Length: 482
Image 1 (spheres, helix red, strand yellow):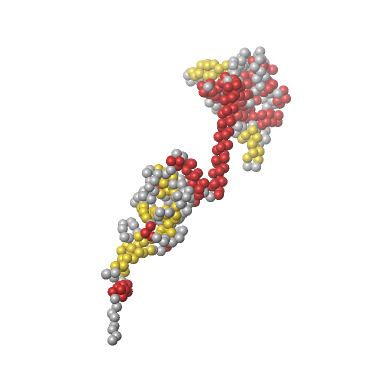
Image 2: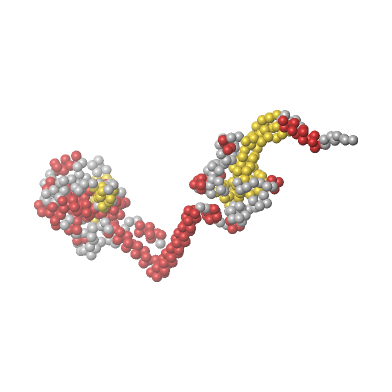
């Protein structure tokens, strides 16, 4: 007798699941928690074989004000062998999160209802922390720098500490890890400077160009340190051999040599003031003869002409005062007039910065004088495809020194430095520096003004024997240092 066996419990359960799937209702529930989507992960280096061995930690951005950063999240995962990290922001984030939406469905088999939640996909990159990756503590208790394969530029924590170029190139990422890293960095890393730690990262993970640059910088550093030690040792040997006083004396002589570059030739052993700075060194006989025609107006100047010059302000005060004191003797008057004319030319030439044409002061200047001014008181420079004559600061100082010497020859070797300084638009300190470098004696004198007031003027006198040579304040500063 044949019997019919009824199906067992396993067959009944399978039929119920099939029926529930066919009649399941879709219920959209949005995000499972406030500001937190469900997490989906994929691993860049393969497929996950044992999910029970993974430990995940999710970190949300604490910046709730910035709408672009409030949804930033970092997902850390670790196994017994490797650690992984992924993020949903920056250039390393998956583009599919912005191009499409991901969902996770949970089926209630009893009610036949499937709850659907928003989800987000993370691409997990491995961190080989145990095989040479530098874990560098940057600041705070849990702020570390980890090597990363993906570039990023939106990490505000790293932006304050790392160059933006490195963040864009994707060699480093700064993350806040609380549970993923349980141990402090090695002692050797704690004793390193921030620069040394970054260099270690470049050695381990930098590009060929970065490593080449690092090696070049290290070689330069070694060469610089070696040069510094060599120079320091040589300086010690020189000091031990010659002594500090001899070195200071040499430095003073160097300052005097620098000053002599813009001073006229000085004959310190002269017995008369006119031989200390010779007139022939200022104006050669040929140049002196060439001034006969242009200086004729000064030689024949009258009191009416001087008054007109003052009203029209055609000449500076120093020149006008000298014209008032022209001697009556014809020979001396001619010499004074020519000297005053050349002095006026020097002052007008000094007021310029760049000499563009061949005639520095106009067509009325003799060729030999114009050549002297350009050759002796300008520097030749190249600009915009052409050569130009430039009156540099050192050349202005040289013109000032020559003007002082010429004025001394005109005024019996005593001049009012204050009036000349104002015409040259120099500071009093700079004028005194140049006068002392020329070994003039500086004195004061009260001068009455037109409105009845008095003011102090500085006088410069050239007399023999000459006072000791003095340079600018550099010498006194050097004495204070030593």
